[in-house]
Every structure is written in C-alpha cells, then in structure tokens.
Image (cartoon, helix red, strand yellow):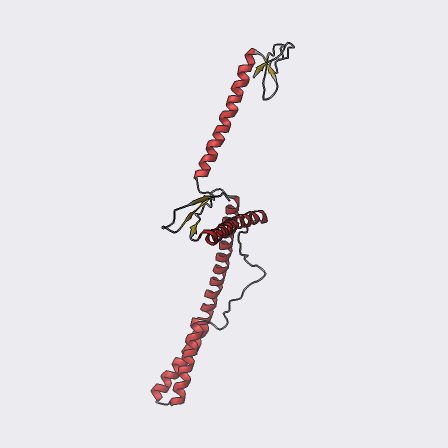
Length: 230
C-alpha cells in the first residue's frame, strides 16, 4: 500500500476524509485505523488460499482416479448392469425350477407305467429283446426329460439390452499424443541422419542420445571430438 497525494480521499470503511493510504491491489483508500484491518482481511484470504493449496496437494498424493466423475459413472453403470443381470438370472432360475417340478410330476406318471410293465413282464416271464430295447429307450428319454425338459429354452430379449461401455480419448488429447510421437520420431531420424554423415566422412563415429556431440569409435584414432547442437 502507498500513501496518497495532497488530495484526501474518503476511507472506504468509515467514509471519513482521512483515506491517506491507497491499496495497490483494489485501488481503494483507507484511513490509518482501517488499513490494518484491510491487511488482516487480505492475510485471511491468503490463509484460505493456502488451505486450498494444501487440500489440492493432498489430492495429488491420493490415487488420481479416487474422485474422478467419469470413474463414478463407470461404477454406477457396472452396478446397474450387474443388478439387471442378477434380476434376469433370478427370474430365469425361478421359472426353470417351476418347469422342472412340473416335468417331474409328468415323469413320475410315465415312470410308474414303465415300472409296472417291467414288474408284470418279469413275473410272467413274458418279454423279448424287443421289449428290453423299448424299456431302455423309454428310461433314457425319461432321464433326459427330468434333467433338462425339452420345453426349456433360453432366449435373448434384444429389446432390453445391457450396453457395453468403453473409454475414448477426445480428439485434442489424441492430437497431442500424435504430436509427441512425431517429435520423438523426428529426433530419432535426425540422430540417424547425423550418424550416417559422420560415418561417411570420418568412419566409425558415435552419436550419444542427446545429439550434442560425436566421438570417433576407433580406439586407435586420435579421439577427435566434434560438437554441434541439433
């Protein structure tokens, strides 16, 4: 803050004509009493900014994806999708259990008929290979129907799909990545070109990765050093 000239200004706080100090930041005049209060207010604002800075530093130390809004959307989509799948699976299981019970009831009636025929044929000793084949076939079909009823089918309801999700990088970020790749490729190409020039002129020259100097690779040479920034 600086003292004002000969013309007095009113203090912005008390409106008295003793505003002898002008704040360089807000360009407002303050009297001797209130200039200290204004400075304390600025110190308080600085403290708040420093607290925000500390909070931001703490967030930088934490995993970067902890509070990311996109991550929250992904988690929500996953939770909703799993809930829909579980609900559909439970509905299908319940329907299948009911179908299996109904199939068992029908199979029980068929089984009693087969068992009665087996018992009576055995007692009367009245059966042949043809009868045995028929009974074996019926028992096999009955076993398959009990385990997996032929009327049970799983179908996909395409009217209520669960869409998949993927993360894409926007065009600006892609362009920046491609530019960085291009810069690195140009640097490598330039180094290769310089290496070829030294090989043509001097033989086994070696260019380090920084590209600022070249040394002769022949240990019998004088070890000349050529410097040229790229």
